[in-house]
Image (tube, rainbow, N blue to C red; front, side, top):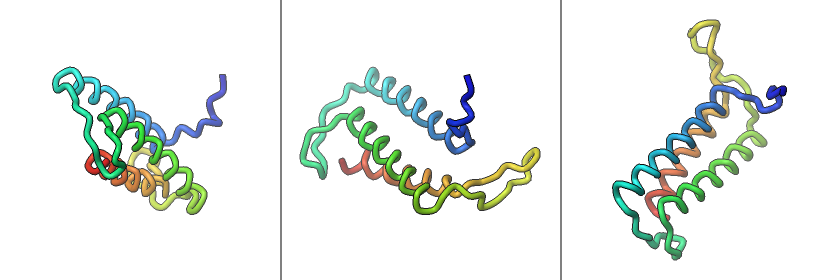
Length: 107
């Protein structure tokens, strides 16, 4: 099976590894500290899992919008190995992290 169409760039790998880490972390937190629903700016009760889903959905839209507006061109090449290219998409990832922190804090 050819997976070349999936564009497994370092940014994509970091994004999905982050999702896996967050799911594991939320599982551990749910076991150790049972959660209670919280009402934030959406005025609906949400749990940690709800806020994770909202932040992941938002991150997907942020990445798609960022790609549509700015593309994924290389902005720098780091002197690691044969040269690790840093894409503009990392900026979209940072925006997504800020968005996720805001969702977990205020939603």
